[in-house]
Image 1: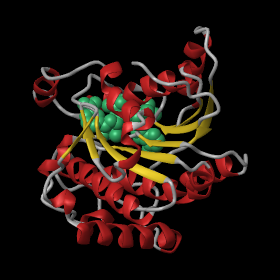
Image 2: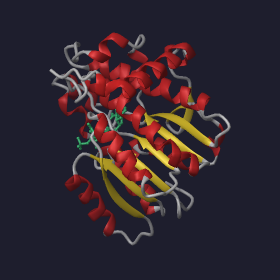
Image 3: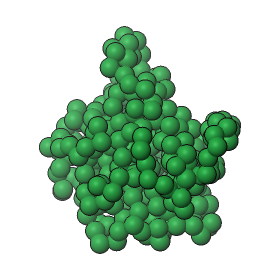
Image 4: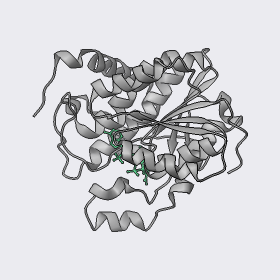
Amino acid sequence: MNINSLNNRIALITGGNSGIGRCTALELARNGAHVFIACRDQGKAQSVIDEFSTFPMVGKIEYLNLDLSDLNSVKNCAREFVSKGLPLHLLINNAGVAGLKGLTQQGFEMTMGVNHLGHFLLTQELMPSLLSGSPSRIINVASRAHVYAKGINFESFRRSTDSKLGIREYCESKLANVLFTKELAKRLKGTGVSSYAVHPGVVASSLWREVPEPLRALIKIFMVSNNKGARTTLHCATSSRTAFESGDYYADSRSKKPSKVALDTNLAAELWTKSSQWVNDYDLTIKKG
Ligand SMILES: NC(=O)c1ccc[n+]([C@@H]2O[C@H](COP(=O)([O-])OP(=O)(O)OC[C@H]3O[C@@H](n4cnc5c(N)ncnc54)[C@H](OP(=O)(O)O)[C@@H]3O)[C@@H](O)[C@H]2O)c1
């Protein structure tokens, strides 16, 4: 991909150790960015750093510890970054799970907790750095799967996964990513911080490992490579054309119309309010089991 130099640009990407995130992190660093990979496993991050060190490149990759299923870990990760006193130009909320069942550390449904709530808190906590990096961008890696969600079931946030394959929760979490992007754009208007939601395509990553056969085999038929999957994220992160289209949903490196429910501004505002309450009150309402 043809990317303008990213020298002196600082990026933080969640799940940068694997799949689409790994390709995105390497490409940003290859073009000069200083990239922080926020993930749960230092060994996996080190393998990206080692791969990068074999390229004759100018950027840099560093590891930050982050477990999105634990809001304390999310806070610690953001605080570690903020304490460095660096501006943040690109926040890429890329990590995600599909087909996983159960509860997060603080008792939220696992897929909604990791895919939406963890990223919601991370974004809030990194806001001072994003504002000091302005013009800066937030990219939420969503999915076209959001079109299968009829709405957000707020009740199901506080109980263990109840659909058989966890697919309903996945689709709702991806709808939450698109709604969050819209609401961020509204709230950040005039700050120079813009937000984008991305559908990366159907990608041959490890995301589908929890999805049982024969559904997995069916999905595989449509898959593209991780490198291709990283393209729309990279486009939103680096293209000068996207700079004025904050809040939009992108697929194939173009702004596309998301589902009707993803354009519901009342639902986006309600999701924001409820998510704020949950991430602020979580230590009072621990419900693990
Ligand atoms: N693949 C597709 O076809 C497709 C389609 C549409 C959207 N997407 C979206 O693309 C994004 C990237 O997924 P991918 O396809 O590249 O899958 P992937 O290879 O499985 O990568 C997922 C990443 O998320 C990380 N992660 C999972 N749980 C985490 C947690 N609790 N805390 C921190 N990190 C966690 C994983 O870390 P570990 O290695 O430690 O597990 C991994 O780095 C996801 O948001 C996904 O929903 C993918």
